[in-house]
Each structure stands twice: as structure tokens, then as C-alpha cells.
Length: 115
Image (cartoon, rainbow, N blue to C red; front, side, top):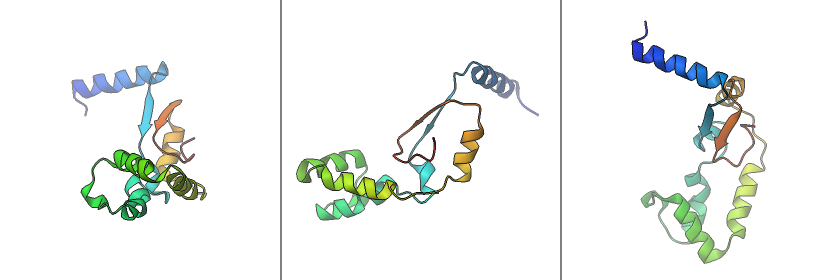
């Protein structure tokens, strides 16, 4: 059935859940299934404006900062508002997370699907 290590891990997780010591960190990928864009999709048109091939970039946060430094914050802010302003429905994964006995969620997402 379970190894001793697996049983110990399961018991430890149950203990931590009971003590409210468990948190979930959910990245942007969680909301992609609901139809929200990921960072690459969000930044692609902006990268084209400044003639950067987004497929050659690995540090998208720095790309966003570079765009802001060159063009100001407003265009990026508007892109975010337009993307997250469209109401989406939670996915099955959001619903599963909501059913867990966990009260602490950390996310990089701008949407409210995880709340």
C-alpha cells in the first residue's frame, strides 16, 4: 500500500492541516484554463512594439520592467485591466482548491478566481 516514508508524509500533512499550517502557492498557470492569459501572452504585443522577440526572452518580469522604463506604466496597466476585467468562471482546479481545508493561498494571479 504505502511505504513508511509515504505514511509519515501523509500523517505530517494531516497534522499540519489540523494546525492550519498549510498554504497553497498558485502561479499564473492556474487561471490559464479559465481563459486568462499567461505572462507571455500578455507581453507579446508589447514586446513587438519595442522590437523584442519574446520567444528569446526567459525573464518576462524584466521584459515588463524594460517596457515600463521605455514607455511608461499606463499601457501595461491597461493591458492588465483589459485582460482581468473580463469575467471568467473558476475551473475545476479552482473549485478543488476551494474545498481543501486550507485558509492560506498565495498567488501571482491578478484575477479573483482563487478567492
